[in-house]
Image (cartoon, rainbow, N blue to C red; front, side, top):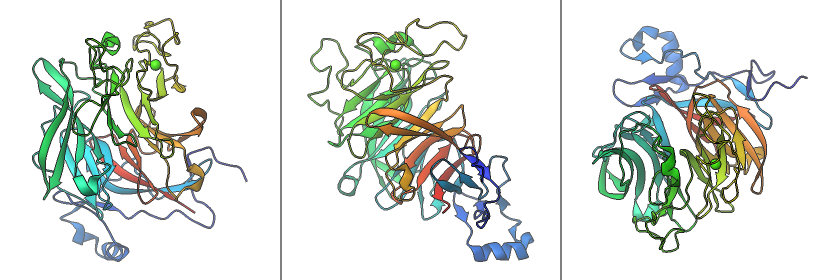
Length: 414
Ligand SMILES: [Ca+2]
């Protein structure tokens, strides 16, 4: 029997025909309900009863229960929520709740099949260009501390810059808010804010800031743009940060020479933090986060300017870190997770990365710190993928980048 191409839909699979997803209903307010089979049957009998509610429109790319045959797993998609406004980050709470940011500046909690109203009292995000409310992360000691972390673009003296906050959620409100990091040099550019969040096994917080569309900033030791930073969870500078004590240097900086990092993930066994970054035209990269390392932007790159003009004739140079994996042409990566669940045994230890421009999910197979294979899943099936996380239930969760964004769960199809 011929093996379908990776990620291509199979209609139908003999002996296990596609099963319709529970439809998602757009409520009058913010709640989204997945219908129980009984309710479905009632709807079929009395469609007019639905009049006050608008059934989700049949979007062209809407997953429909199709079984996808991939290299190492058969899977189906479940749409858990839709109508999200440019969702950007997602993070799981210990109780199974899921925090979701929306770029215009809203944070919602998805729990037991329902999406909450926006959390009230959040710090104000500047939704300009690529800016807005970006990533969200849950404290490694959340059960004791209750801290939730946010990255966002904010307006201040001189223009826009990336900020890092923490606060607690209480009765649907953001309380105890603390500004942990505020980019000193703000500009009016609407691009390259970063910003992903990750923790190392010691509980230190890493966050990324892009070059703000101004390439030389990524190589200026005194700047905070174009690099990864590391802070303690209270915002203080760890004394062993690599640039501490260097005159004029940003002491929160942990790397430099990064163009715009929108994916970071901590390896579940090694504790090492991996990242990817957007190249210009071509030259998206996967790298390991190393203390004090210079990743070379814009001195070295595998890409060219959007105009086609040369940015650098070099793709490698002494003292600058070579990427572990490069995409030419660019896929525009966003979001990243190591798969560590039990639902897809063959994927254990693989690195999953969403793609915006290429509208797909990448699976990278690793051998230690080497990337040895790439598979492209869900190509053009659900649109631009902004975020991907492994859930505590062992499924993979995705957010699609759209003004009508989806929360999607990948489930094994047997
Ligand atoms: Ca590089």
